[in-house]
Image (tube, rainbow, N blue to C red; front, side, top):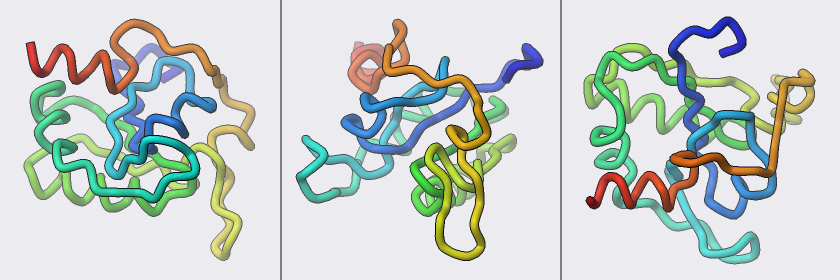
Length: 131
């Protein structure tokens, strides 16, 4: 991303998790979602549809979550759907603490923010998809 390559970081964490902090320039399309951090997770029935209507099948996508579990499932789902340039960000945003330990985006000192730019929030993406 820093090299200027046309790559998009797709954060598949829930909306409340994304709002707590995310990589600069990331877009949020939750694989599982919840209305608040204390609510239980539920599958996002529109995940694949929203990704398909937002990105071309040859788009370079970095798919990440909190620690790597959801992003692996999302990456597999996208590859099965025909997306060709998918990279699962192992360790995700916060890092994997259980063996094998993997540092996340934050632990590597990569740029993060709590601000959401135009077109980065799930609400903005849905508005465009549903327009």
